[in-house]
Length: 245
Ligand code: ADP
Ligand code: MG
Image (cartoon, rainbow, N blue to C red; front, side, top):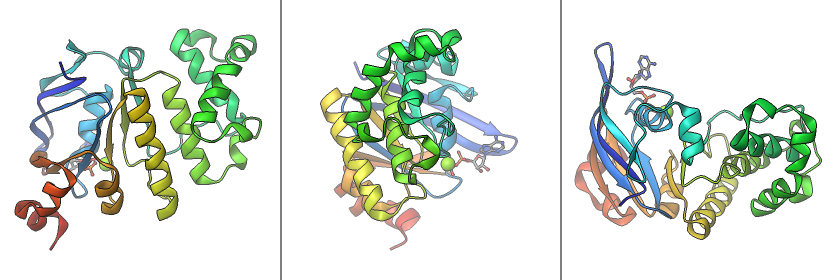
């Protein structure tokens, strides 16, 4: 049984078909890249898997269980973690507190702002920060961090939910090339060691071909190709439609 099964998902906005019968599956520890030009439907697909958007048709199964109609919060509790393109950290709080908040929302959202509850999770937060190489910055306000470091903290926040599946929509947007590679190296090592399935979108083909274990190509709401990075690089239809050579 695959970790994630996406079965014939479709979504239109007015006359625009953003997803048409999209079907694929994802296994634990896979790094699956979703590529395609702007407007191809990548974010729409992410939002249907994350629960932010209702599909017109089709279903989403996590560990064999239908989550198609579950709220984002329910999916989060069932193991769907997510990072966002725009930083979601609370800038006025320090790094560890941001992770502690996420640890609380795994248990009881109503206590997220209650200081004693937050403090209970300090040790676990430090261990997560250690995994992403940010333990030394635990007591710094998030507002003082460099952009690449905020992204690492966001990864720790996503890991706080102990996700089985991690959705990363353009995780390296706005980062310098070397930072991009470092963040994706880190993500790949976590995916492998914690057996997390990662679905990510990425514009930088060096990152895609360097870090994905498998690639899906989306064009006008449809998957036009899927395979290993090597297969995708050589696929004539992909070259013509997307890679532009
Ligand atoms: P990508 O992430 O690949 O750039 P999107 O999923 O954001 O693509 O968009 C796919 C298509 O759906 C685009 O034509 C976009 O304009 C349209 N679209 C996405 N979200 C909405 C929305 N909320 N309302 C109307 N059209 C939308
Ligand atoms: Mg997008």
